[in-house]
Length: 186
Image (cartoon, rainbow, N blue to C red; front, side, top):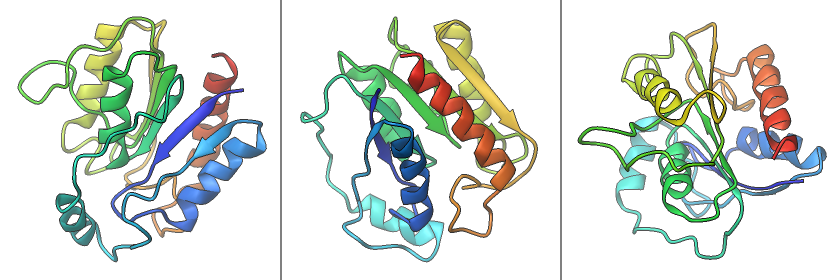
């Protein structure tokens, strides 16, 4: 079984993020859900972004040999750690992806670190702001044996969070099925 660190989105550590983590736990995985906002649950993405701007740089020395996962904004932390921490076992990137080349890139994807990226094909953030292109680029650079991009029909952002109106139960079930297979194969 895998150990996973799941970073929340800009609306905080919601009941939906906890429920997502609970499904992974129910399948035998250890899942940490750090609350980067200290219990605050912003009402809007804009409020969450403003709160995120006030956070200091975080360090994660206590996590070694784990799968880093993130939902939307949480992908920034998860992907950075997966790309820069020796010993990362993998990455699960939900509803966001950062570039691996160019001015905004963290750097190349590390050899031997598997990754799955999940997003909706008409999500205004994932598809409309370049994350889908970054995901395709990551798959191209890492190779299709290590990296997989899964697209789901629809335009909801934060569709994996069951506590939000944008939740898509059918797509989330498929995301979880694929993520559980990924974790089982590590």
